Length: 371
Image (tube, rainbow, N blue to C red):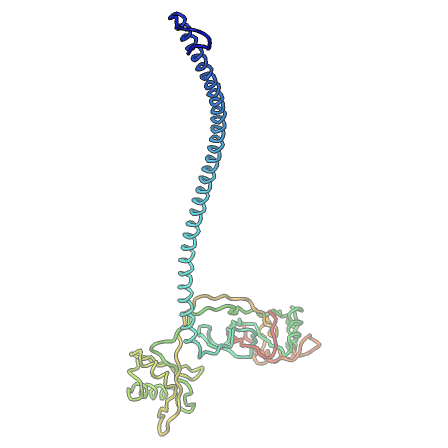
């Protein structure tokens, strides 16, 4: 394009004009590119800033993610630990439950055993152990027999006497004085007073059971002899029509005037015990006898203790200077006198020198004793 008023008809001039026009166009493009470059540089700077911010934010997010992962891992470990503890507790509780179940089974068995024993012993009335003992003048020739009563057999050697006073304080005074000078007719004799110490049963554990084949027959007639009673009982209870059966053994209990019958068939005893009473013919008349279970016991454990009699005194050192009755009377006279420290004598037994006897000590229900 030619400027106004310029004639470009000449070729050289026209080329120059074209070049100028091209230069102006190129300069305009260069300027435009520079502006774009500046804009791009600004954009790149902003992108760098955005990148740094994004990297910083990404780092923060990664830290947060790492912390959360650590917390989750710790939480999982805690859950695993608690789960393991819970499993151990459950296992321990299961073991404890098994132990408790075994204990319950043992307790049930014990209860059943106690119920069985209670059923067996419900008809038994116990009066307890020996609590108070006193010598009441009874003598025995041996120490081998067993008594169901509360009795203790005490050996009395020759030249000794047992004296039971009415008042315990008198016995205590006699024992405390120890040596006594007794007037035997025309001479004096020194004797020694000692306390009587007995070994008594303090604790007894017995396994008691009802005998499956035995019965106890009591309330027997007093006017009939032992052999006749046993024959009549065996004859009567040996018959099936009376509920009995074949008798294997028989035993008469003289101290309580009762009898024990043992049958061959174990069903007979329970059948007779259930009926309780029978009218058994003894000669021309019948007598009502009673039947109860027979107990069998085995000793499981026992303990003895020492018991000192508080009314009975042992006198030793008595010489054989006159006859037995005279010596006994002289001893009783001496120890009855308050001037000799004595008092009312309830029982007195004397065993001469060279002899031996056994005294029976029984429950003293009237006067308490000192242990």
